[in-house]
View 1 (cartoon, rainbow, N blue to C red):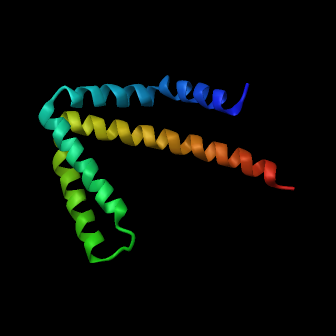
View 2 (view 1 turned 90 degrees about the horizontal axis):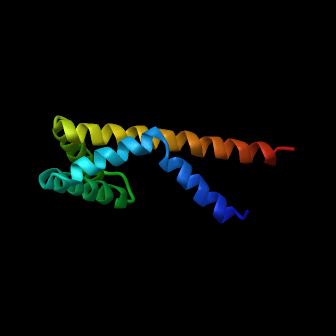
Length: 111
């Protein structure tokens, strides 16, 4: 079995997790409500704009403040709150997975 095949199997395993299934359900709910889908799309665009700012400064701080305020407002909508929480849970799970992979690889690099 080559590494690409194992990666595909790993992706399948990720899609079977509770965190992924909850994120998918929350995303499907958002997608069925056009106004919420639009709001989520707009906030994703704002996130990308902030990520594209290469140097912290007044512009970065201003956009970050605006994004945080938008997140606060949107998190009051139950469907979006569920989506954001599911996204956070999924991201935390993936962070733990990446950390475990990294730790395993690094342990084999030590003499």
